[in-house]
Image (cartoon, rainbow, N blue to C red; front, side, top):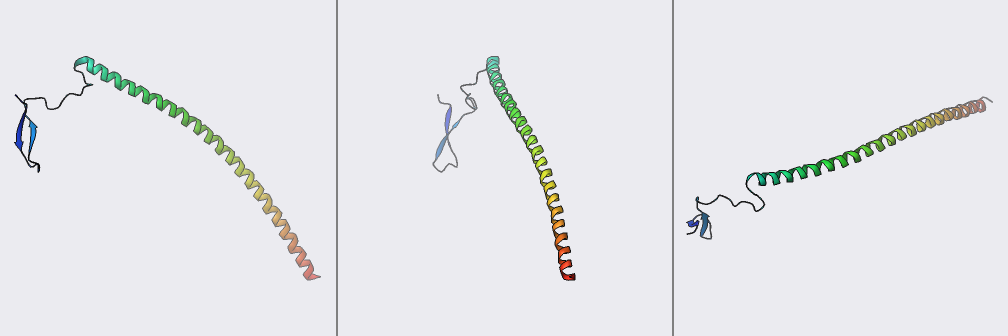
Length: 113
């Protein structure tokens, strides 16, 4: 005796088969086992995945720590370079002021002569 019965529905191709309510609602997955053994295997699988995730997080954390340290060193170097550049610009401004002052005084002296 079959667990299916013919039913006519809105399917444009005509009849379709529908399982009767006497059988299981869905087939069990072949990997799924019943009882404590099945739960234990599933739990072991989950623990393995969590362990792999933790290991990857540890590696990524270490990598990020190294990158952060490198970025910190680079930032300190850039800050030092910026200070040197600023000092050099101040020296150039000072020298330009002296040159402009000398040129202005020279021009005034020429006009007054």
